[in-house]
Length: 90
Image 1 (cartoon, rainbow, N blue to C red):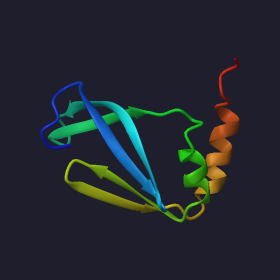
Image 2 (cartoon, helix red, strand yellow):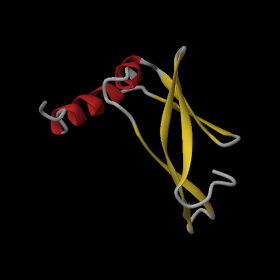
Image 3 (cartoon, rainbow, N blue to C red):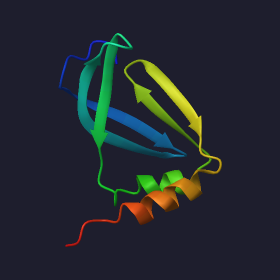
Image 4 (cartoon, one colour):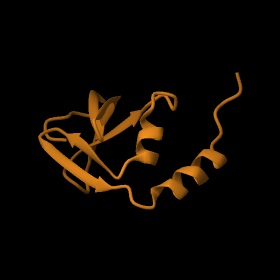
């Protein structure tokens, strides 16, 4: 992410279909890429996982760059992840 300093707060938009999710996190400098790498968190109940599991593609915006990726066949991976990482008990 151009211009992002170590641990600088960032917002990474993720677009799935017509829905837009704003993921909050921080960016840290990465020597391998020569730029900053974002680390984000999100509430698993915010609807993004459901959108990703039912969508066919998604787009992530990092600074001025846009990354589009397909979601074909990803439902199985999400199902495995959700079983392996259950929500915390109340």
